[in-house]
Image (tube, rainbow, N blue to C red; front, side, top):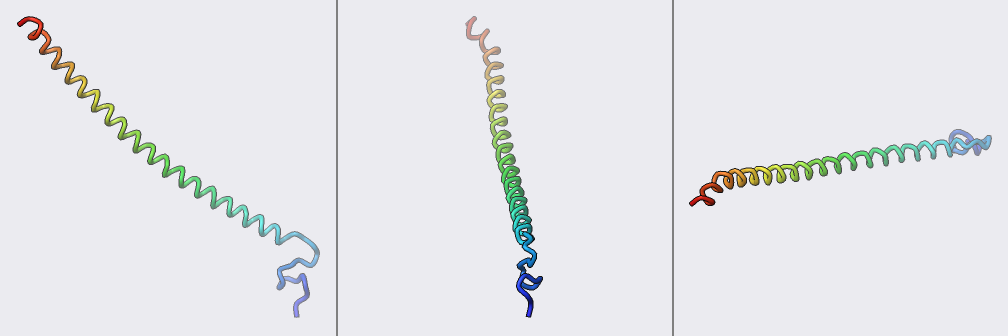
Length: 84
């Protein structure tokens, strides 16, 4: 029969805090896992942000193109309209 505090019982006989060290290691592992989760969420959020920025930039370029075309037509048609 094992003694109390022996290796089999998991409780240290000399009063050391080795179970606490295991608990703190587990806590560090949990913090590391939490950090990995936060990093993964940040990566996904940055991809969403980049997608929205790309969409907005495409719209702005399209608007500029349409504006330039309209300005070109106005430049061509303005002399005709002003001198009938």
